[in-house]
Length: 542
Image (cartoon, rainbow, N blue to C red; front, side, top):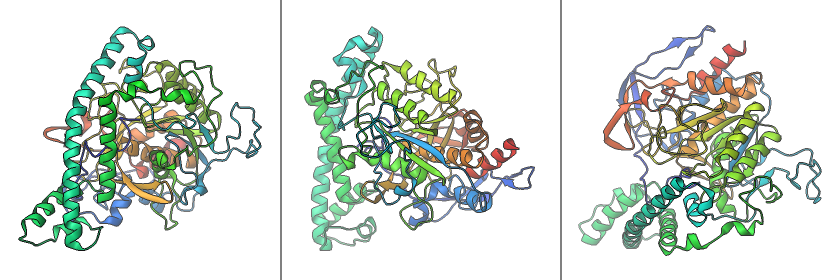
């Protein structure tokens, strides 16, 4: 999960909260008389985006709200009002989901064929008491990265792959030395600045607005103001910022000490991760042993399906959704075996959409995952995959799983790969971390500052292509709910073809000197739009 989880503090700062307006629009009218949404041509900057709008920006409209959202609210108000859809099961293959969350309890999939807590495999699928899904990780939370596992056991791969893994490991060790020093310096600055400003304000918690308003000639306070303005620009409160830095620092220290290579995290599970036929492992605790470790999966699930219009937190993209949890993605890299079996489990239990907000650069048993994806294709299940957060072109760089082993020819037509959008409509519309690929990224969706459920009835902003994928999966679930006769292949094509085309040049990788046509960054050259997708679904369904 290391390449797809929310962006770490040591890598990127959150973007400034600036919205854009439109002075001219282009539109086209559908056969039904409804106007499909097109991107505004000329951009005029507006006031900063409000907190309320930021919390649901992915639901807003690129024309009316001048924010590159998916027009979800418009779709519900104008296209779905008075209509009834069918329930759609969405598989969340991730780090676990807090199924006790106040905003998710009403949207959980429940295995009607299983009697809870009787210790019997009632439905005889090999998984005892799998009421809300299955946990293929058992009590594991931490894991090695795949290149570390390859270095520990080079028999898993050929010599060329081993050498590539070794080169990456050596590079990471070098980077960790620099990163460790940088993070230690950041912590020192934060601790000193925080202590000074806490004394200045007479309270432990304060906002960036309060810091900006400081007027002082006292040198130490002025120094602390400048330092904390920079630190708080990451978009996190001081306590959370410190925790994020300390977590990244812990990772660097473990890498430099070699502890990761010394530890076999998998042994507590008792299975053979290199034997796909060894399937009787894990348990039914889909939250996992530590609820905090389910943050990523809980957030992903919330983006898709947190209850709408209930005054709690944010709103999910899709209604009529049941969340089926597959816990298969640890803090580290997922095993191919867990992903392959997890996809098959979700398919066998009725999922019509599966979200995969995970990825890695090496995949020793990639064929197992390919076979599982092809199995999902046979069962008419759409697999939505995050493109990755390395600001790389995955037409050349690896980000497994993929739907094209040679990066050119697809082996299945049920996989859609999603890049991430920023909420600024203009040349910064592409998230600075998002991977791109004219061949291997299909379409873009909102992925910066996405507000959704997190463990223990909390809600947070997270960012990453991990957040873009479930936004897309939510729209896919809407289509499959209201137009169930459409196939996974058709839904994929609708998401791509109905999207809003961005016809301007944009900044790539957050580098101001690297601007390219947005159309060159993905196969469709578009951003997902729920309103347009439902219009097209209606037309195709008829």
